[in-house]
Image (cartoon, rainbow over all chains, first blue to last red):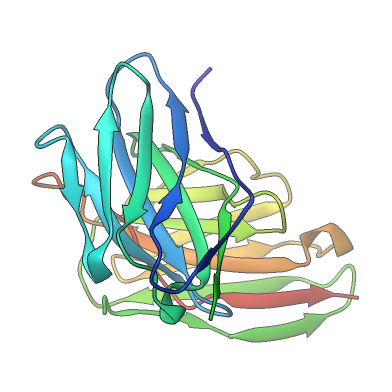
Length: 112
Length: 114
């Protein structure tokens, strides 16, 4: 069965340190992959997407993700966390227009 | 920001009453989606539309119906609201063309069924 797993429900880092949010997917073929961010009481905003072009994808606000087919992973990283990065992050797998699977989310906290 | 609005933004209703949520887009995108968001579940697809009058069910469609009579509007109806339908509802749109599979989300509607 196709699925997406966000390995950490909560990640806490200090401001200025690197961020790593982990996502693994299960699919019988290469899907489209996305990361979205949701700030409190807001809708979801697209951070970046992978659609079978470059495996290293750059997004907004300094985030990037690397697609690793052999590991079925699409981890999200940022070199230096900022207080404004505190939010919920969702990894999403698109298999078709009707089959879009959301991970359960990772809450990122930033310590001053 | 993509032009997506949802109305109402907040609603409190009683069990057994019908409720309709509206999603309106100004982007002329083909695909429109309704999701619900509950703690620990991420977003789950209720229904989606791939064109005017073309709709299909998602994974949690029981108790919900939708209609799309024109490109810009996608309505979600709870025929007889239940407490289990208390949730935050998000509408999303997607062009689905030229690799544009990403979705753009509305601000959400917080529905409370008492």
